[in-house]
Length: 329
Image (cartoon, rainbow, N blue to C red; front, side, top):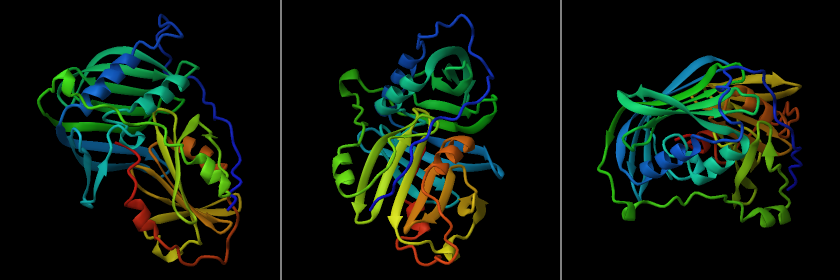
C-alpha cells in the first residue's frame, strides 16, 4: 500500500504587519502567557458560544459553535444549526483554539516567535494580547487571552499580507470556579507517532513535513486500507484521511468540483478547509483550519491523477468522515 507522497517546502509570503523593532529577535515574551492560559482553561470549567469565520475561495463562511468544557471529561462542541455534537480533548492539537496543547506550543515555538502585544478586550472581558510572528516579521496569528484566567477568548490567523483569513471568538462565556493548583488538570497532549514503524512496514509512505512548516504529530491506521495523518505548524491543524477505494460523486452534495492540473478536487463551503479527491485507488479527505494558500500548497504535493471513469462507491461515505473530525477547538 504505497502512497509515495513527495515532501515539499514552505511557501513564502511578502512582509506585512511587522513586529515592533524593539522586540529581541530570539525573545518569546508571550509564550509563557499562552502556556499559562492553556493550563488554566484545561483546569477550569466553562461554557459559551464561539463564532468562527474563514475567508477563502468562496468568500466568508461562518459557523456557530456551542462549547462546554468539563475538566477531566473533555470539551463538548455542538455545531449550529446541524446540532452535531463532538467530544474533543482540549489538550490535543484538535482542541487548539481555547487551550493550545504543549504539542501545539512546542511546534509553534520552533516555527514562530511569540511576543506580547499589549492589552485589549474580547467578549466584553479584559484580555492580554499575544502576537505569533513569522521569521520575516509579519504577524501570523493574534491571541486574546482572558486576563481572569479563562480560555483563549479570540484567535485570528493572518496571511503574509496581513489579511485575516480565519477568526474564532467567544461571543458569550461563563466561567466555572478556579480550581486549586493541586487539582489542576495535566496536559496529556503529545506526539502520537508510535505507530510509524508499523505503518511503514505495512507499506504506507507519507511526508513528515508539509509546505507551511506543517509537522506530522499523529499517524495511525484504524482498519485495513485506512490511514489518518495529523499535521500542525503550531497554529493550524490539517487532518488527512486516506482510504482504499474510489469516490462516490453522487453523494457529494454541497461540494464544488475544481479541475487542477488535469485532476478533480471537490471543495465544500465551510468555516474549515474541506477537500476530497480520488487517486490511485485511494480517496483523500482533508480538513484544516489553516489559511487557504497553506492548504493548497500542502494538498498540491499529495498524490493526484485524473480518474475520469472511476466514480463509484466510497465505503464509509464522505458524510461519515465529516462527522469524525473537528480540526479546531
